[in-house]
Image (cartoon, rainbow, N blue to C red; front, side, top):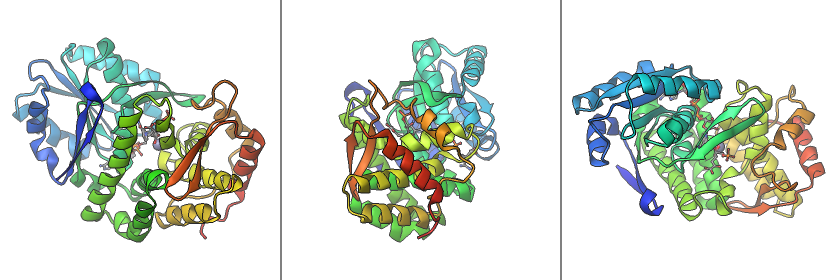
Amino acid sequence: MRELTVDLGERSYHIYIGEGLLNEADTYFSKHGISNKSPLLIITDTNIAPLHLAFLEERLQGGGFKAFSAVVPSGEGSKSLSMLEELIAKALDAGLDRKSTIVALGGGVVGDLAGFVAASFMRGVKFVQIPTTILAHDSSVGGKVAVNHPKAKNIIGAFHQPEFVLYDLNLLQTLPPREVRSGLSEVVKHGLIWDASFVQWCEDHADRLLALDADSLGYALHNGCSVKASVVSQDERENGLRAILNLGHTIGHAIEAVGGYNGLQHGEAIAIGMVGSAKLGVRYGAPEEVYTTTKRVLAKCELPTALPEHFDVDAIMEAMMHDKKFAEGTMVFIVPSAIGEVEIKSDVPVAWVREIVEELKLEVEQL
Ligand SMILES: NC(=O)c1ccc[n+]([C@@H]2O[C@H](COP(=O)([O-])OP(=O)(O)OC[C@H]3O[C@@H](n4cnc5c(N)ncnc54)[C@H](O)[C@@H]3O)[C@@H](O)[C@H]2O)c1
Ligand SMILES: O=C(O)C(=O)C[C@@H](O)[C@H](O)[C@H](O)COP(=O)(O)O
Ligand SMILES: [Zn+2]
């Protein structure tokens, strides 16, 4: 079992990563002071529920917790205000009170949605993250919780840290191959922003990661979570440094919004966005290797590296103007200067960004 701490003073918490941790879910809940007097609500989705929900319910109920559950349709569409309202109704029906806990059993969609329920129900109740995707090594740590608006990703949200993160690697074994690939995108991102040797490791171990080899996964998720925890510990509310976690997201989020949140998966859109950021880096003077390595490693993880033909450049540019980093009339981008190093650049010329989005449509998928 691997353990990490997100160091945030009184909001500090642990991340536990290992095989079979769900077997002891009740012990972790007790250890972390989750109430067994007030009901708790597990939120999950329609794909995960038949695979893993009953086991978690049994463990918690067996340990004396009053566990209720709510199952939302799988997919990004569930990160909506209307779903938030439905879940608040479920929480009220189940009798949750201010000492209750919301539990996210799922990937980033469930985590972001359940986290926002926890942040807003009765102005904030406790929250536990039980990630079930590779991508959720990113979403379960750091406390960003949100739902989408049709015009912009994650635009209605809060910062609400979990009590702890319980990452049972066995749950990942049921992931469909596309979700394995999508999750690797944010793993590679953590290397690209922080640690060149980890990017090399990802390239060398891509085959094993794609095959869900438990040792490789444990190492990758521990490393990714550790980068995330370091950054979040230094800048919880994104006043500066934390923006680097957004590498590839300005373009990526725009791709997701323009696709109506049912086209590319988050990790896929971010992979294309990171190729765009690497191109921008080269324009700012980074070595060509920044672009070639970024593209090659993502391709090794079988991720898309070109923008599909049907995407409209004008629509993507329009969606980008709603990015949270766009403020006071300035376009801010996370730009790589070397592999493992990025800079936060303000006043990025909009014309350059447009040219890069156009180029992304012309990219050849594999190097
Ligand atoms: N809060 C943050 O810091 C943060 C960070 C990164 C991403 N995100 C958000 O995370 C979301 C993407 O997360 P995701 O990629 O995990 O998507 P997801 O939650 O939609 O999960 C992907 C798919 O896999 C299925 N699934 C999940 N776990 C499974 C399992 N163990 N077995 C079988 N199927 C399983 C889901 O039902 C879904 O169909 C986006 O909304 C993104 O904005 C948030
Ligand atoms: O935790 C962060 O900070 C991130 O930027 C992580 C991203 O991978 C994630 O997709 C996040 O939800 C994006 O945040 P946003 O503030 O740009 O919506
Ligand atoms: Zn992301």
